[in-house]
Image (cartoon, rainbow, N blue to C red):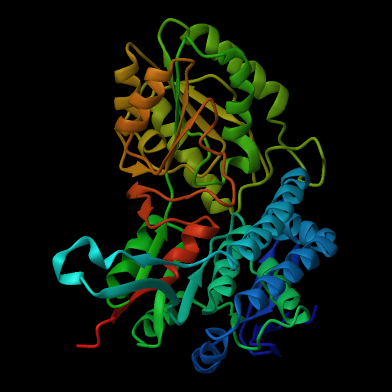
Length: 476
């Protein structure tokens, strides 16, 4: 198998250092990928800095047309992307198809947003000092952005960095996750075929040791990072002068009130908890249920888990729960489950492992200070707990160092606004699981879940800086 080159601008580059990409389902070697070293990273940075002068002057209509060409090309090569998502990430085929569709939508939305006005007048007459002046505020691109993406959505999370970058006239060095770099490299090919400016985005697989030097280079103006908590906060300490967005993770919760249509919603929660083996930072990990319906809900939820959360071969269209990304991740979460059981938690499903597949795990009576309850599991595991009052349920959600999204199931409008006000999260979803996300909504969290917002228009705002123009109309 010939090592896969990476894209430095629009050039395919081969290096001696390579990394293996393995299929998490059967362990098969999918590809060898060439790794960028300090030399290639330096060349990519030089190219990105140089290309920025061209990219920033590109007219919005040209940016929009490019983004639409990319969206169309993703659709034309959808089958290739689906195959790579299954092979490198173990993503079930039905979910892989959805991810490709979402990536198309991401570029389509960016194409539309590129044409929207990005400025507004300033009412200078609002203060006595401003009399006789007119003002304008517009947003301008920053320059070179370093984008770092995780393994779990190796196409669409890359798209969520690349599309806003192109829409705003910035340039980017994109570092994909080393476990799943192939979708990013294929997207790079798509950009080249669609005649994106050479050097506007370089897709470089490289080791973490090279990130620090990039962040110390004054030409890098922003870090957009999606990934683990520990790495994210470490990078924040190193990115002293850059703008930063961090999307780090969570242990998303649902609150289920008796006034909701909870029997119907139980199916939604089962899918939100176990799709793609729970390997999403907004996967449902904790479900708090009012005590008056707890027993009935538990049985309804377990029924839905048995019916919908089918574990197995990701190529099977019936599969919802595929393999975990590594054996180490699997072993870690199994140890967390066993620890919780040793401390009094009750398993409501068998603890069953097949190869690198962990079958759905549902627990109750879990002490809140156990890892499986308070850390991010990133696995097909759900903890059930009852509460007495709605306020108690909201407090239980907030009893976490994370704050990404939360789902609240209720038919009471007053409770909707109570939850919206009280919950310490980036997004409150009503009668919907926190796993829900669209490409145009603001997406991000608080506390250890990070800061800044993704979602195409919000990422575009973060990737620009506002600048004022004040004119003294009297000339004196």
